[in-house]
Structures are given as structure tokens and as C-alpha cells.
Amino acid sequence: MENTHLDILKPDDWHVHLREGHILSQVLPFTYDNFGSALIMPNLDKPIENISLAEDYYAEICRHIPKEIKFTPHMTLYLTNCLTQDEIKKVSNHRYIKAIKMYPRGATTNSESGISNIAEFYPLFEAMEKNKVILSIHGEVTDEKVDVFEREKVFIERVLTKIINNFPNLRIVLEHITSADAVKFIEKHKNIGATITNHHLMVNRNIMLSKGIRPDFYCAPILKTEYDRLALVQAAISGSDKFFLGTDSAPHVNGKKISACGCAGIFSSPLAVPLLIQLFEKHNSLDTIEKFMSKNGRGFYGLEQQQDRVLYVKRSRSVNTIKNIKTDAGKITVFNPYNELYWERIN
Ligand code: DOR
Ligand code: ZN
Image 1 (cartoon, rainbow, N blue to C red):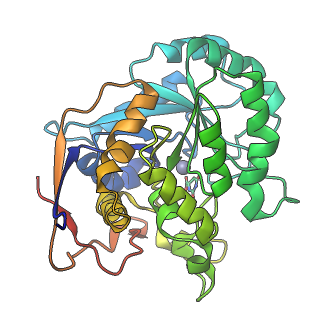
Image 2: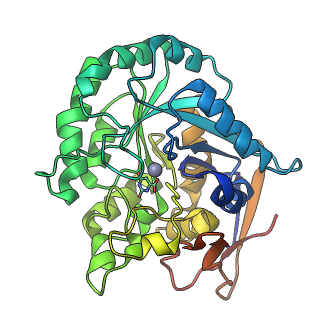
């Protein structure tokens, strides 16, 4: 019999960009409405590179959350050489800072403060390993000699393998994995998990490039082949506790995105959950979606399971969905690669 109801623990988003100021106020409701908690990325114009900045940013986010809403922001620090071993120790006991994010310099939006020489950071990785602080990684090399579609694979071979060999007990999240190679690597190694985004599960580079260019599907790391997409789908639906949802929802106003030299980033929070339900349904895997969206991430981050539940129902006709949101600086397109979307939340 066809499943028309899905009653699951409330999902979490283990990778989201909320920005700041007015954009924050406009995008945050889609995260606190749909998710019980979210891990918030630190790549603001002025990077969140220490605890004090993370506490200010947390306070700014909390000011926009209505009292009746139960939502937990988990914060991250941006790894730079300003970070100290002492600060890492403090992070290990911090109530809501949950990871340190490593950006290779130049890999993506606001990554100018990212790292270029990995060996310089070994003392900090050692402190993280010792204090059980999670390292969250944007896994791409930025070497211009490496083809853009190969940058994750080369990062795994040249950089990640070294980190893992030197710090076997360091807990790592490889963020927004995009390839079959990445899936294999994660499955093979201990102490490493991975987030997977909606867009890498739902679209591929042909869809982005073969029938006219689709800047709304442009993101970093860039979309890969259909073969890679299917490997990611298999990982997500497998139920393996190493894979969990991180939307990487990354709002950019259309003026900056749908333009010459458009920004990388896809705003996906508003429809992320019903789109995923539809994907898992298509693969006859609604029984594992709660693991992917609500349980595995908490397990990896060592948090108790969520208490709240959400109920989605499948309508017989496509439901009206949001196409964009308006901000002071212009509209932001909402990610929805499906023509029809049937699942709707009812509680
Ligand atoms: O596409 C992306 N956009 N990937 C990232 O890693 C960062 C993000 C952003 O901040 O816009
Ligand atoms: Zn991101």
C-alpha cells in the first residue's frame, strides 16, 4: 500500500548559511520552522574566528527567534591562525559551539581567510583530537591546475588522507560530499562522517549545463555526474550512521547570483524536507529517512535524540510551493528541482 503519512523525529540541518542582518531575518524562519536545530556556518564577511564572535553571532540569531519556537542554533568557528589551543579547549566545553570549520583559501564564498598551508594547522588538529572537538571540512583543493570537477577527489587524496593518517582519532565531518569517491572514502574510514545536501542528491552537472546554463544550480563544490548523484542517494538511503543531512542552504540575492560571475550557493531551506521525502519515496526508502534527517547527525555530534516529531502527508495533487523570498537587496530563488511536490507538513 502506498505510504501517505510520514511521522518522524524533527529533522536537523547540519550545515546552513544564515548570513547576518536583514538577510538573516528573512531566511532564518525557514530553518527554525523546518528543523529542530542547525549547525551554522561561520563564513560571514567578517569570519567568526573566535568564541567571542561566535557568541555575538549566536545572540544575533537568537534575537530573531520568537519565544514560542523551540530551535537550537549550534555554532562553528572559522579555522584561521588566530585560533589557539587554549580556545579549542574552551570550545570542547562550550554549550553551543560544536565544530571548527576549515575552508581552503579561495574555495568558496568568503573563504579568503581560509587556510593555504595545512601543515601549519597540525598543532591545532592535535588539540582538537585531544579535546574531542569536531573538524568540519570544505573538501576541495583550490589549485588552479586541478579541474573544478576533480577538486574534491584530489582533496581527499592529497589533504584529507594526510589529516586522517596523522590524527586517526580526530572526528571529522566532510561537508557537502558530491562524489562516489567521497562516499567510498567515508565508508572506509573511522571517525569521519559526511553531510549531503539536497541539491547534490537531486541535480547533476548535465541539468546545470546541458540545456542552457542554470546559475540557480551553481554551488561549491560543483555538481558532479549522474553516477555520482546516484552514489550519494545510495549513501543517504542506506541508513548508515555516517551520512546525514546538511542542506548547505546558502542564500544569495538573484542580482548577484544570476549574473556574470554569479555566486556559488543554493537557497534550499524552505522546501528541503518535503523534497527529500519525495526523493526517498521514489527510492522506496521512507523507512530510512528519519536516520538521515533526524538521527545520524545527532549521533555523530554526540547529542541526545530529538523529542519533537513532525507529520507530513502526501497530497493527491501537487501543493503550491514557494518560488522565492523577497529581501531589501532583491529576491532569492528557492531550490526546487521537481515540477511537482506532493508532501506537506501538517503539524
Ligand atoms: O555553494 C556554496 N555556497 N558553497 C559553500 O561552501 C559556501 C556557500 C556560501 O556561503 O554561499
Ligand atoms: Zn556551506
